[in-house]
Length: 236
Ligand code: URA
Image (cartoon, rainbow, N blue to C red; front, side):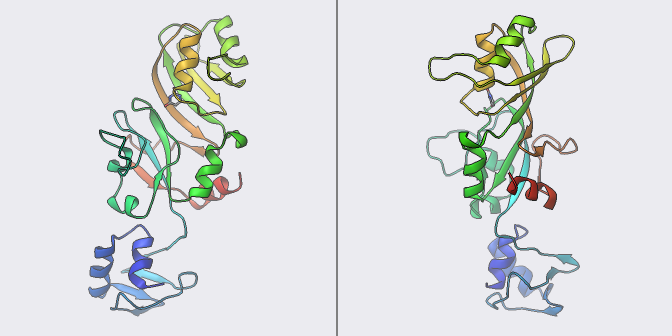
């Protein structure tokens, strides 16, 4: 693989930054300065550094975004979407590398969103066949009593689908708690609460399969997934 492609594929550089970094003489391959962007290197064995910092190319990229309110879970290239997309919170390289949000959170839902370029994995994570559990922290308008709780957990019949049994853990006030569902129907949690006579006023995704929202990640910020998180996702 060409050295400039390797650098931009690491997510650390855009293609033009990669060229500049190489020409600056700060890029080394196996300890030797390389100043030509077109040099071919073995992406599986080469040790590439920018100054003292390792530059690691991986086949697929994975990032976690703590989505704030007011952003659409779509790529910039989707012509049906108007307004700001979550991709505008991320470095422009992400779009160039083909990364996209894995699944959708409503515009006013916040929290954990996986951003990746691994299409086959995203397909599996979102497929109804795989029942990947998603957990949301919620606040609602009317306290959830015993009967409402039972209805939420046992499944609700809608005109277009019946929700699968799920888990709802309530805080003592009955107005907030956590709900874990294994489906991802449009506005699903909001529709479930509406059906039992309450309205969701706050919704935050805190878990997606094996991934947990990193509490140290401020709203609107992102970070790369760790090796352990990537391994957990791929072992589903
Ligand atoms: N359920 C909803 O109603 N909205 C979301 O964004 C996610 C789950």
